[in-house]
Length: 146
Picture 1: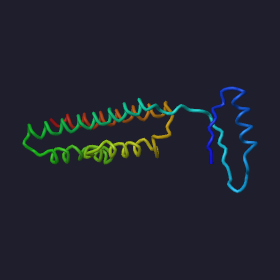
Picture 2 (picture 1 turned 30 degrees about the horizontal axis):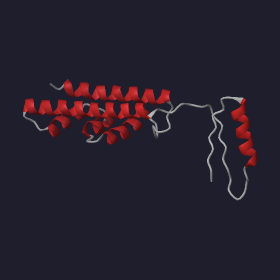
Picture 3 (picture 1 turned 90 degrees about the vertical axis):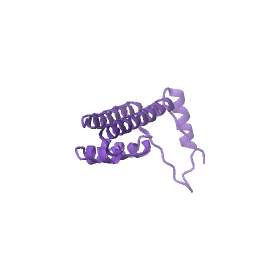
Picture 4 (picture 1 turned 180 degrees about the vertical axis):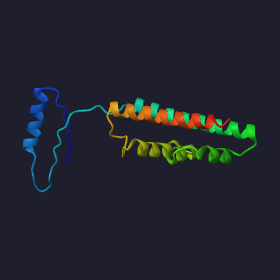
């Protein structure tokens, strides 16, 4: 079955969409037509930037934890346990995350969004800003332990 997507920019495209809809057989398979305001989705470049920033933030947090551990003679796990005690539980999970995918899942919960895949550009940028703020809060909290 062919899937169609029309972005109604002009009368010609709208007429083409109407022609396709009129030609649809309604049986044996039901068809769905959704009409909503168009919203750009994020680009692969923006997506790559997000993951690079998230990875960099986790690396900065872990480097800071390792430096504190080295300076104090504690293990990185002990430093993380101490830091996590003063953080919201979601932030603590991110602090212990070994992979950016884990942190991303928690960040989606913090932002109350089920998936970032279908976020429009504006909402994705808002999510990215929120991610940077959360990661900055965690890093600042860890650095304050020194």
